[in-house]
Length: 301
Image (cartoon, rainbow, N blue to C red):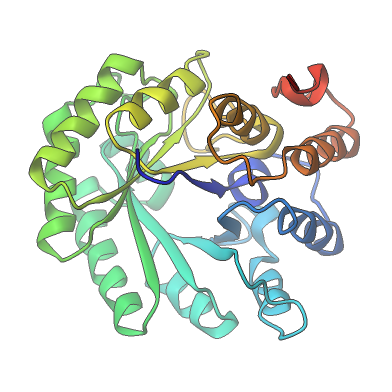
């Protein structure tokens, strides 16, 4: 089995649906706590227009803070989501190390999210990714709505694979398949990733699942079974895309880590710290979160 990588997206995907704007100082505090958990990648935010997603208006400030020598992490990659070259320009100013960008396999979702069709967005995002690589940055390209769409329903697998092939032709091998609408199920996940690896076994695959219909963790294990290495998840199960039809949270980070550790995988991650963070998020928003382990406590034998 390949080493498992945990990419925490709670400060971006987790918070973008929250109407209560979280102050920058609180986000910095949470980010500092995430850095103690030994996760591998931490997504600080997204470079989107502040009127569309007000919660992300301070993403530049967060990166500027954590790029100061006294705050810069040694063993955690800080990622940021961008939608176009304007986001890249902002990211270059504040020092983003890893860019996450992609297109939706659903034309309807693509237009709602970016104002462009899938074809238009693919050409534009590949050009933007090439600029980021030329600047010496790490890039992850994603296919969103890869397993289904709340607006269009079934998304043909060949459409998803067609986008992956365009990424590969452009020289990109760090590729994520995102279940934006939460429609994925394990057999579909295995088929999809098996097809991707048949095209090129050296692809660095990431998966991003939502738990809309309760299959998030099962889908993670299906992806792992066929060789997926990197898993995006959100603290306490927060999150959801504001531009999809039914927005429900991501796979819960502490639940995923607890499950892995039961199988003697990623025992180095500090689960207790993640549980404390999940409780902090629940307390801050004054509601019960979708995650389970922070409420039940971990199994410790």
